[in-house]
Amino acid sequence: MPIYTKVADDGGKWVEIGANSGELPGLGGWTTIEEVSGTYDKHEYNDADGDWVAYEFKDNGTITTSGGIVDALLVGGGSYRTSVPRFCGGRVNEGLLLIGESHTITVGKGQQTQSATWGSGSAISGVIEQGPVPYPATGNYADAGTAPNGGVISNITGSEVNYAAHSLGTPGGSTAVNNTAGLDGVVVIRVPAANAQSVSETRHSWLNFATVENGVVTSVNKTPDNIPYTTAVDEIPCGPEVAEGWNYDGSEFVAPEPDHSEQIKELEETLKNLRSAK
Image 1 (cartoon, helix red, strand yellow):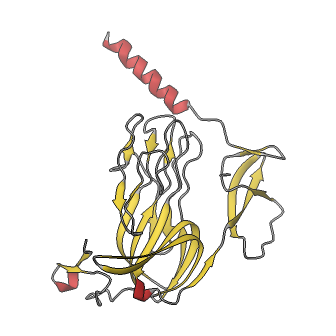
Image 2 (cartoon, one colour; image 1 turned 135 degrees about the vertical axis):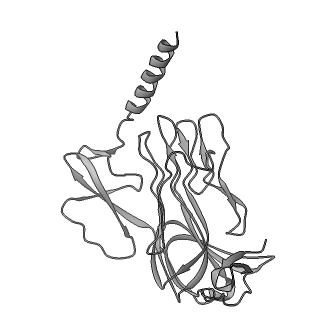
Image 3 (spheres, helix red, strand yellow; image 1 turned 90 degrees about the vertical axis):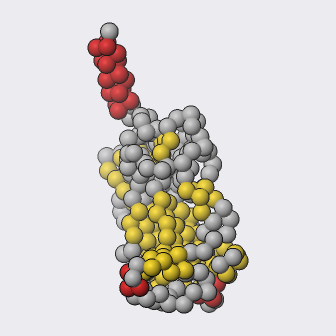
């Protein structure tokens, strides 16, 4: 399927921008990717629009380019809540972006506990900060018992995937069912294969350190495992699942107990309305 964009400097006309397209009026052409690092998968494929390379970040990372246009997909982390909306896929933002030379990639984390907070947002620093889903989560919201539902279908990696769906195990910012946590989001950056020929690639995982005050995690710091790091005096090594608000008893991190206050309020309001209707 051809890719098009509307160019104001060309009278607002729709201009095709496939892998073989030249520069666009007022925007320039595709960027050349020079370096990537982090936790990612590399996809190389051919479709009707040409040859492509897509970097799919499944955790944080960095990207360095010559500056120009990329095709991008950002999906925030999914959420599970004890009150309506019970299940929400991460918010999705997709399309062509004009980016600069150096950027940090942030992949949103899924909400791991049944609390009143959302999964975190995904971002390309300095370009787009894709926040978590608000209520209502337009297009991706699904209440209990309606899986699969919502989501955004994209083939940016060469394979068709339903991102941000209300479906157990679907990758990319989906919500899980059966009272389990929302899944992490994803950031995908794609350019024509000719613009990703000599990329310096560094795959690495992450070390996680929690700052704890009075037995509660106040923040979590992530650092690449391939770079020497000196921990601060109040930082404690932890697993990737640990998040702000978790408890620490001196030896083990434990997820906080579910906050049922919103659900109780809704039930009390429903009961009040039923009594008034009599």
